[in-house]
Image 1 (cartoon, rainbow, N blue to C red):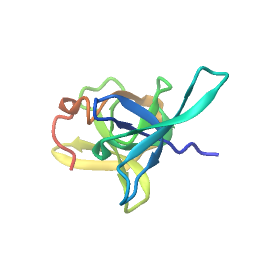
Image 2: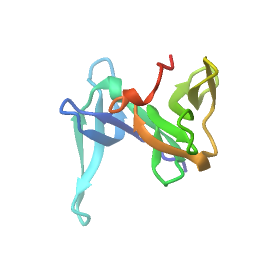
Image 3: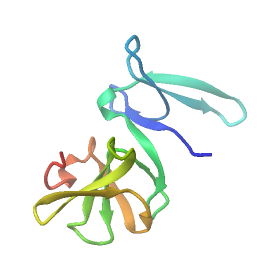
Length: 132
């Protein structure tokens, strides 16, 4: 079964990971499990909707979960930096990158050579140009 979860920052800038709840009547919130191991309960926190990113289901070369909005580096190349985004037209997570002055993209997969180096909310300076 695939893992569906999200991450987002609360108003104090703290990241939370769990289930996303959002509607016209409710502000965005993340529900997450908390407890001491023997007794776990669900808790929730309101989050900034602009920081919400879904887990892609993939791990980088270091075993870290890759989320929408992460910035990845391919191999050791300083120019091999890309951003993870959802592509609605092909219904897949893709990496967006610059190549010879043009924006390129391809579906995210085979993350053997990718390492997370930051995300667009905490480290926007890692992207040399905006990938929009």
